[in-house]
Image (tube, rainbow, N blue to C red):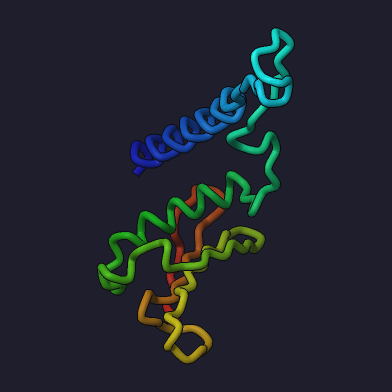
Length: 147
C-alpha cells in the first residue's frame, strides 16, 4: 500500500507542478495589427490568457484529508458490497469531516432525476458509505453503509 500511495502522491505532485507551469507558460503574445491600422511597426500587443492568472478555488482540501481520502478510495474501489457499476467516483459527492483521532470520508451517491429524494442508502448511481481513517497512520478503522 505504501508504494501505491507514494506513486499516487508523486502523480498528484507532478500534475500540480505541470498545472502551475502551464499557467505561467500559457500566456500568448498576439500582435494585433487591427488596433494600429495594420502593418504599422508600432503594433499593439495584447495578452491572451489561456487560464486566468489566479482563478478562485472551487474547493480547498488539506493534504491530510486528501491522504485520508486516498486510503478510503483504495478500499472503495475493491469493496465487494459496492457493485462494479456503482463505483464511479464521478457519481458521488465526497464530504470530509474529522474528530479528535479520526478523519471521516463520506461517499454520498448522487441521484438520477427520476429518483425520489431520500436520506441515506442507495441510489441508482451508488451506495452511501463512510470510512473512518485513523489520523496517526491513515489506516481504515471502520466502514459504515447506510440504509
